[in-house]
Image (cartoon, rainbow, N blue to C red; front, side, top):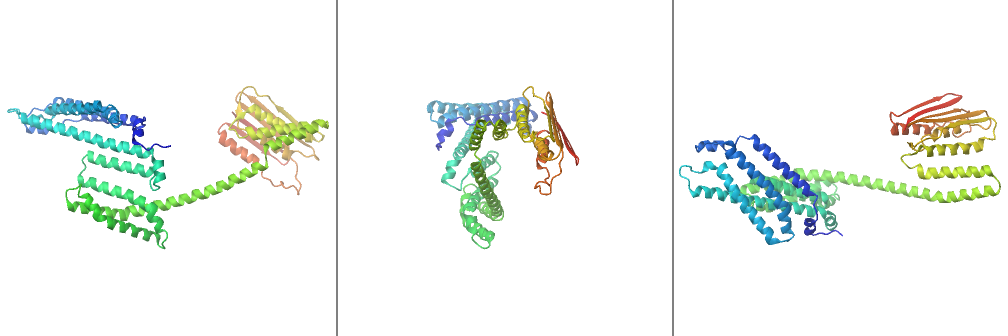
Length: 505
């Protein structure tokens, strides 16, 4: 059962830990690199104050120490202090560590600012007021950094909680899924970054309202507005009318909400108007198109599932009709009967047919099999055909198949189609006919030849105009499985048929 508690997401090892560490490290390294390439942003302030500016004293070394403390402090806060406080483990100790970290960084940052902002100090008449202002700003900035870390922590754990319980949440609220939660988390992070980099109140509020409204409108449209509009004659117009009505009703409430974040009432109403216009002209039509595409995709998947279900049912029916255990039991019964009646040739044929069936059922579905097993199947097939043709003096069948030394593998049923084709088209019980088969192997290469006579087919033969699909399939399999590793030569004349295959295993 899925545990929908925040403590569970905090206590267990998070996969984001490594990502956070390496991202923080990358930012730290990039900051050091950027620090070494700058020439001091406050140089002009020092010159205006009449203070001699030194790059390393007034900029490089103080900033290097500051960046290092920020990096180490973030690691300590993010991976140690905050998780322990949220788990309520040794709260007094980690609270003191948090306070100590705040005081330490605030004090050290103030000391560093006496160098980076020393142009603010009256060196001719230095007083405590100058230092008080610097240290007050330092502790105020440190408190702001802690607030940012708190916002980041809230976003991170809220996102992890929502994503880890996406299945349970979707089961309770069908309009919420993992994709929606991911977009919502991205929205929170984007707004947070705009606040961190101080993009501007109006710009941040505009982005926050437009993007959040777009997410909400997409959810409402997908589950309520569009399904309801599809019942109308003009579906898109009915849908857009509903979107327009919602934006008109939300215009004033959104404006009042924006007044909390922006200083000007005019700016709040302007942002709300731009938001409503954007949702009606952009978000609404895009949501409609996305819904239509998803609906078409669902219908296609439904059709495919239906066809797949029918195919699976037909396949199961065919399998039930040809039960291999029944066939093997029947063959064993015939084999025993043939031995009792002293029909050794019949018994031998039944035994070879059973071996071939086992090969077809078990090994034929593998990617590769031992070459020796493929040759054993070929020999069983040839011996089975000899039972039919050995009594005819007009038929000559010669085989020279070498035994394979070593464990060499080959795709199953790759050689047998050539032999089947030879017996199918080269043997006649009424006319003189012949087949010559040879297989020779050297290391990882085999040389395979099949040479057979051709017989004229009668007009009543249903396969008179057959195109040899088996050989076409073998050629395709060779091109797919052994590209640039085989050579296939086929010579077809009115009297004979010759196949030569060189294969690099």
